[in-house]
Amino acid sequence: MDMRAVAETLVAGEHFNAWDLDEAGPEALAELREIRRTGSPALRNAARALLFAVGGPEALGEYDLGLVRRLIRSKLADDVPVPMDCCEVWYAIPTTDQAAVLDAFGLSDAEPVTMSLGTEIWSRRHSPLGHQRCAQVYVSPALDGWTLVFGSASPDQHPPGIVEERDWDAGPRDRYANILANEAVWRRVTRERCVELSRRFGTAHFHFTSHGDAMTSWCIAEKGELVRFYDAAVPEESVGELAAENGYLLPHEDTPLPEGWADDIEHTENPLDWQREWVRRHRRLKAELGIPDHCDADTIAEALSVHPGKIGPHTRVEGHGVIALTRCGREYGHPRTLLTGLAYTPPPERPSIFDEDRT
Image (cartoon, rainbow, N blue to C red; front, side, top):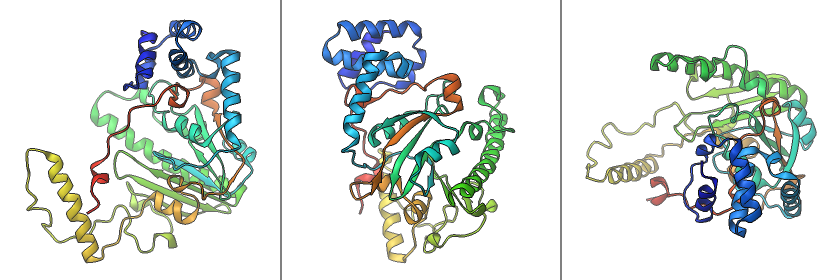
């Protein structure tokens, strides 16, 4: 891989798929260190980010690592919460004792980070290579008295009964069966983890929101007892109820709209026209008929603890966030994470059709 070309792409603000860095081998580090010595200021900044992405903090070298740590420390005192996008999976623990949370999840090698940097590191962990997804966890500062943990302990990622992806049969039917079997194991593990955490901290919440489909789940435990478990994929496994769910439809429940309400929407050459009209009409009919919204993990988090997507200057903050290694991270190393905050400004994301028109 031509790392100079990659660095120039970052400097130009052009799109670069960080997953392509999975192809970078040890020789890439030598090339990047040469750019750090001889390149322009912009290229040197990009090379620093790429060194971190390919080799983790240890690849930066003593000088650059010290520089990054000093930069982070200088920003911590004035760190202001910003709403988190793509939260997906997190635990909420009602404590300001970060050390106890790290211990409860088996985390170590904690490095202080600003909230924006912690969010960025967490949101870019999706490389399928090796243990990239399970090596690192972001633990927030105490937010209105709640510590949020984005990620899971290694034993929860690789529990007994899980069929690892590398062992899956190539057939689509077998792959789907393995996915369903693994999800059943993870649901059990999540319930057990919440109950265990609640014995130590009094209360523990788990939240999951998929950003690829409508799947969502939440789990609430108090004083060693499971109070509520809900997963939209298997509503028949639900346990308990929450007052916070009152006034909402559960995710698996159909919206009671009139039959054929969308049949006459015209299909044009542009499929987005149909989608936009479908969204407009769906919202209008819900309002006219007084049909409640569906709740999800975000709804429950906002009602019972802290919703990461709604934090901001109004949020009370104690301490600072950290990025910490799981057992997988200690054994296999830091995940490859391309941090835009160390190098360049990425091109803006395209708006969703759901953001374009609220009529």
